[in-house]
Length: 115
Length: 115
Figure (cartoon, rainbow over the protein chains, first blue to last red):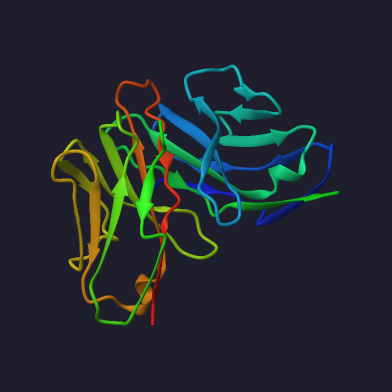
C-alpha cells in the first residue's frame, strides 16, 4: 500500500524565522511526483511546490524549498523568512506516474506563525 | 482562468435525504477528480474522470455515491440516502494532460453536514 506520513500534527515558527515540515512516504514505485499543498483556514488548497522523483535537484519556489531524499523516501518542506500569511494546514502528497492519477495525501501539519 | 468552482459551499441535510454537488473545473482541463476530507485528515480520493469517462473509482465510493461528467465539462456528485458518516468536505480538483506533471488544482469544497 502507498502511504504518506506527516509526523508533526502542529508546528510553530516565529515570524521571519525558518521552519521545516517533515513528510515520509512509502511506495514500491520508482517514478512519481511529490507535492506540498497549503490549505488556509476555510480556504481552498493551493499548490506550494512540486518535485519530480527522477530529478535529483531539490525544487525551490521563492521562500519555499524541499529536501528530497529518494532513498530515505523523505520529502520535507522548508519555509524561510516565515510570514503571518504562511499560517495554514500543509499537506504532503504524491502520485505515481503510471496506472492511476489519484493523489495520496498525508494527514497534514498545522503551521502557526507567531508575531 | 477563474479556477475550480464548487456549488453549494455548504449543505445541511437530514439523514436519508439525497444531495447533489456540482463542480466546474478550470475551462481547459480535461481531467476532474473528487476527494473527501474529514476533520483532521488529508483528502481521500473518490473518483476520476478523463473528459466524460469515469476511469477510476475508490472503494470509498459506495453504491450510494454516483458521479457524472456528461459533457466532459462540469461534474456532479450525488449521495443517496445520506448517513451521518457522510459528513465531510467534498473537494473537486482538475488538471490537464497537456502539463507534464498533471498537477491538480483544487476547488473550495462543499461542506456536507448530515443531521
